[in-house]
Image (cartoon, rainbow, N blue to C red):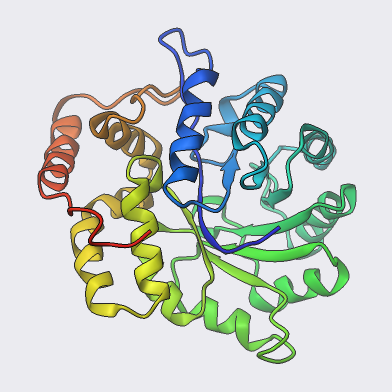
Length: 306
């Protein structure tokens, strides 16, 4: 498992009756991989995992593995109310053909470090799959500190990465500083918020678990590549255009908004499962204005490399 590059936190597409549109999801995955994405992360928050039944989750994973057809790894997000359910899902993800896991803290209950360590450790023990810890204290109320991340990595040889979504770019340097040596950076760091990617790469991040890539894959891959190559002027030119959309990834209705961008960009629809409801009224009009402005001034390709 190579925890580098742009890995979409993939949305779950729904039909009009809110059943899963597996055919479109297979097409969507192929479009993003063809644009240069290095893998697909399924069943995350952006994938509305909390609204999916267990069998629906497995069906999505199997569909993604088939769609990727060995060209790139499929990563399963492991989130659950109980440790037992999380372990069950991790094992099922391995059976479905996934090559990696994104491990979340338990939903709802905000445990202390001893409890969260036990939860994560049980998932990491459940399979030999390469794993990425998801740290998002803003959304989940659980903050995995740099020394705790390294404690887990020291005890679990299959913990290879962290999705850092604290929104604090200093955390990237703090995690890297605890490595044994610059040549022994076992923990790869992936940026988990869309509007921190250029700064995150400058601090040493090697990957991006991206949201807006669902709607604009070519632009997302180009931004990552330019920033990684140190082409700062070109990267910021693209970043300046992209930021109004990337900021949609950092607000409570990020799922509604990213799916709306997909719909406007011709790569999906805006349907969400309850309790979420599609945007309406002034909220919808405000979002559409931002999206329309961005699409009307969309950069021309191939001036930005894949």
